[in-house]
Amino acid sequence: MKFKSKHLRRLGYLGLGLLSAILLYLLFLRPTPIKEGGFTSFADENTIIFEVINEGFADVKLLDVRVNDGMKPAKAELGVSYSLHLVGGEGLDEDPDIEFVDIREVPIKPELMPDEKQAAIDQGSHIPLNYGIRLYNDEPITQIEVKYRYGGITFTRELPMGRFFNKP
Image (cartoon, rainbow, N blue to C red; front, side):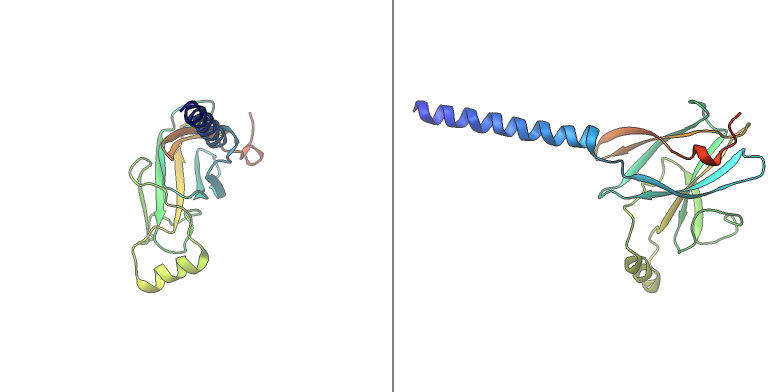
């Protein structure tokens, strides 16, 4: 009987160690699933649109976007494209296949492979294919921070786009 107890205790320690290793990986070592693609900055740099790509395996839920060391932008919108047209550049409001919603309204689905995107278009499916965040601010934007939930865990990430901004 004593042998079984020792055996169960070892299994318990092994399980606890494995669970700790998984949590350590998820919280600290795993790269973030959010990646920024190209972006559009308008002449005054008070309005910026940047592509958002979910490289993870589950939906990403945007919670908040901050600019310039934690300031809330005048307006933040999530652009959702139902075509191969990226959410960037001008004329987005006139495109019937792109809609802008509140950043918390639509989760960002994992990125589809090019053949999956083409199949969705060929079938006429109304599936989001590209995402972008449009920010309006009262002063030039010099830094962007995105807060989101992925896999039940909340993350905050500063987007490394500083080389594009005119620093004061």
